[in-house]
Length: 274
Image (tube, rainbow, N blue to C red; front, side, top):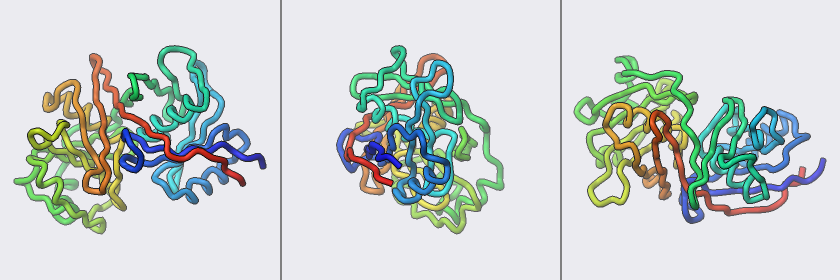
């Protein structure tokens, strides 16, 4: 089997080791599903992606996205990181906007100076979460009703349930008890402290670990908060601070469309030999 160009990048970060890492295998034609899954399991990052020739009209490239355990139809930080890797390797989009093809369809990606931004996919489930979700919050996250402003389904594929907290101190103090999650994935958000330099802080709990900086969650949180009039149409979110990271997610909106952007920092370039 031939060698493959390989990149590892830090997404939603302007400096190395501060965001969410992503492994990218370039020109992955010839790798079968089982080999892709083994590579993703071996890198042991939250996601590993595989760049492929475009397999749909209008697409600039196709992408497959794997966690160590399964394939995903779409994910946010893999979209931005893979696009950055494709461009750095000499990829030339057919138009001003890069078009990624993945299992979720065609994903437009804009270039804005040093940042890339993807258009948020539509929610597949929305609206207030019921008592069956709220009832797990005390055991799972140590939250009481007095800590919470709202609990909403904000699922754009991964299954996110959003929890808006009254203050950022409560957000920072959370120590998750994953045994109490009952299969849920929670995205927590709170208004930032005055003078923080950003507008909201987020934390993402998958039910097994805390994710450093999460594109899909920030996309769905933005659609929720902007749609409800809680957030302005453009804002900056921070995520990963409690994990020693310093991720920044730039939200912009054009009419009904929400765009999720951030910087991508290359960290490793090399060759994958199989």
